[in-house]
Image (cartoon, helix red, strand yellow):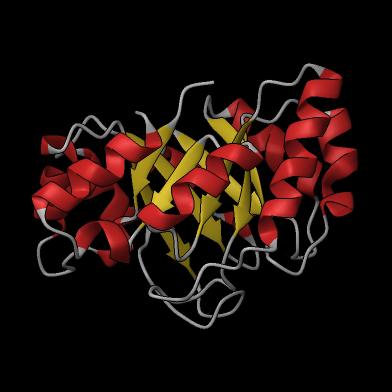
Amino acid sequence: MEKILAPSILAGNHANLKNALNIAEQDGRKWIHLDIMDGHFVPNLSFGPQTVADLRKESELFFDVHLMLDNPHIYIDAFAQAGADLITIHIEPSYDHLKAIDQVRKVGKKVGIAINPGTPVDDILDLINSVELDLILCMTVNPGFGGQSFIHDVLQKVEKLAAIRDEISGNYLIEVDGGVGPQHIKPCLNAGVDVFVAGTAYYKGTDSERRTFSESVGE
């Protein structure tokens, strides 16, 4: 499968998010990752649909929108209308996950399911076997803030998801998000990762460091 480096705009300059988009585009990136936090499911706040809509006007990048919300199903339509291309929801909160996935499909968007570091793959097996997912996101930090250290044990879950994908002839991409730096690319590739979300390591680097980062992914 194609390998993708998706810069997380959360780590960009919030006073000039348009420039953060431009950096990714000029670097040849195809995706941008947008973390949406509600201050409840995770202990932080970030962007709302209006920010996504304004950024959409400035870019043709693939918008990978990650809803870290207690009630993501309430906001699916809003983020779809704002310009999301893919909407990822978490398994951990209590809501009708199947209905929410169907809702994303009905608004014509790709759909992903996310699991936190402490959540086992077994918690999403029923979804994997009952619906077609475009992406499964394995958080490699406990979500909420940038700049955390990569949790290597999560790669065991990536390996399991890659094995399941082979067994069922699935097409979902496997994404990692949290503390991802150039030093993690090789073990992630070996485990079966397809999409690498990088925030601090990407936006705090020089142009040369970003090029090296993307080359290591193989995009």
